[in-house]
Image (tube, rainbow over all chains, first blue to last red; front, side, top):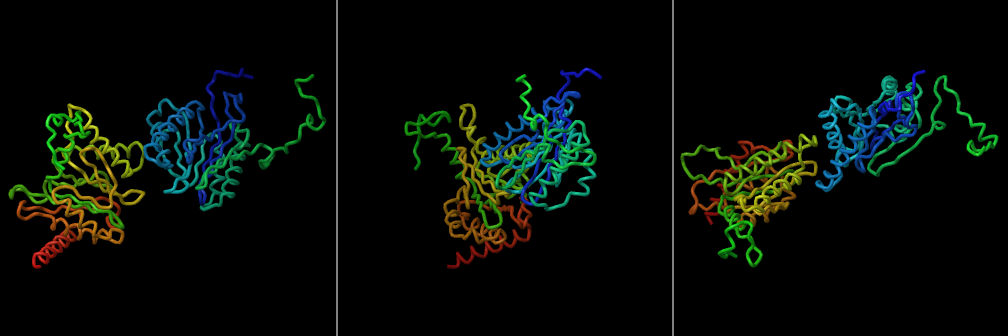
Length: 232
Length: 249
């Protein structure tokens, strides 16, 4: 077995999703950050706030996506102060795109920008590797998304309710986690609409079981009342 | 309320003992002596109108435009020193296209007005610059609806339902106040603006003038454009008729 290279760049293999529904958007992601084959963080939060009403799902290089988010958050903050009202999702996505495009030689990050504003309601914008910007009713990204194209072709429909949309996202991320080695951990979702933002968290035992997967069992350590590992 | 500011009026960076900056006030006088410019905000858009005084019979009609498009959704009518006005318009156009390239959205009219006002104000802060000798009426239609702003040589900018600058501004303002702007469509407003401009034009003191009008409204698809030819002719005819009726009394 090759030695694990702890100095390899942190990459979020990742599965990220953004979906519009009638009233807003639902963003979803897995929580695995890997350094080579080592899982550096099994509970990361890949859905990052840009403004009160706009969030971004990050994939690819962890560092690159964090830096881009930080810059955009800073610019949007100033823009909001100047404008005197919340920034629109389109403006946020455009700022992300400018950074991604103008620094395309030095960045390796795919982003999905999603949010709600009073003019256009819920919107999702995909900003993949080269720095294109494309508004879509739903967007998927990251290494795990390869396994979801067919799933969305079948399962996606226009004008879903909030619950339907969140179910769809949860199911999709957990399907990708099952097949993609670089995605794993828990499923995080963020729902954004006119009323505000709701964050949800679904650990493994709350996710559906897919073909050939095993049921999770309670650990014998819990059942037998075994002492804490460190107390021996 | 004129007064001579002897000694305190030579530089824009000098205050007078009673707290006035005379250079800015003198700049405003340049605007007051120019042809009347009106802007009104109606139910479905903005109409801008200019009394363009023609100094020479040799000039081609339609030349020396006083109303300029700043962006697809907004336009600017200038009163005062024409060359100064051209600078302000150039700056406004530049701000608008820059905003569009950075933020991916047409510049909100409020933001545009703020930036133009900042620029005009900038030139009142340094002794090596002089204030702009022109006032600007800016009308635009964005996501928050139609909006009208006026920027004065001091750099002050307010939002208005109706605004007038130049020679006939007092009379024009009185006429505008008589209109019920919430019920007026732009199509009707064009006629009213023409009547007002013809009304305030002083036949005795000034030479010929040319009426220049533009609008941005639902009918023009929220784009700023010259008022269509036939509507402009209709407005001019109605205005001339109204004048004759007034004279006949």
